[in-house]
Amino acid sequence: MDLGLHHLRIVVVVAEAGAISRAATRLKVAQSGLTAQLRRIEQGFGAPLFDRSRDGVVPTELGRHVILRAEELLRGFADLMATAKLLVPDEQEHSELRLGGGDNPWVPVIATEVRRLLPDRDQITYIEATPATVVDMLRDGKLDVAVLTDYPDVPPAGHEEFDGRLLGVEPLVIGLGAVHRFAGRDEVDLAELADEDWVAPPDAASGLRLSLRLACERAGFSPRFRHFGADRATAEALVASSHAVTVLHRTAAQRKDVRLVRLADEPLWSRTTVVWPAESPMASISDAFHPRRL
Image (spheres, rainbow, N blue to C red):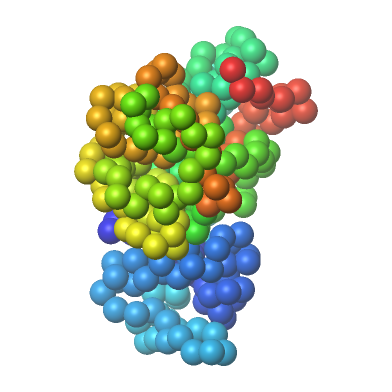
């Protein structure tokens, strides 16, 4: 696992909160998801960063070292961004509007709305594998606006320093081939899919694959991933041509031979937020910014 600034922020928040439950509340994520994320971070460092007890968490010797250096790095990075902007000549200001996001149906919606409100700006779009990468690009001044999506049990990429707007929370659905035995159903229980082959969400680091795995484990099984690395279009083609299933955004499917079936009790959802720095051109249109799905 490659560690980055967003992982250091998680460690610092846990240390400040003194308990994973309080840190999860501060980060607005499920405690189980934060626990899993923290374990992966500790694996990256090679040893535990915290001693756990009923009363909370206490940093280990390694943890105290990591927290101290993490705080220094986070302060240093914030100072770097602030001072670097002072050194950029006004004539180098770009006329483009740079939009970043993941493989998400909201991205073209936001791109269309921004283009409508800022027609004189050339628009550049970056599709990245992980929300953390998108946030890092935003902090580095490489993006003017970002579309971020997070999922149950997975800590979202921190973006508290930016302005933004929650676009909504929507349940995810299961994509089935037209000949699948559940294709005629309006709803299926996740446990009924225990024996299926799955098309894995496109990138494990986006969070959706972990979210799906945890939801399946709560339903009593581990998903049998058989297809990896597929983007949304390829995932739909695999579903249509075989007996594999996958998880999709409700508005994502474009193929007539793919059926979308609701999950009972909606155990999987996506939460999408659009964020931008205060100095972004987005600030001038935020009051008029009312995106709608196409």
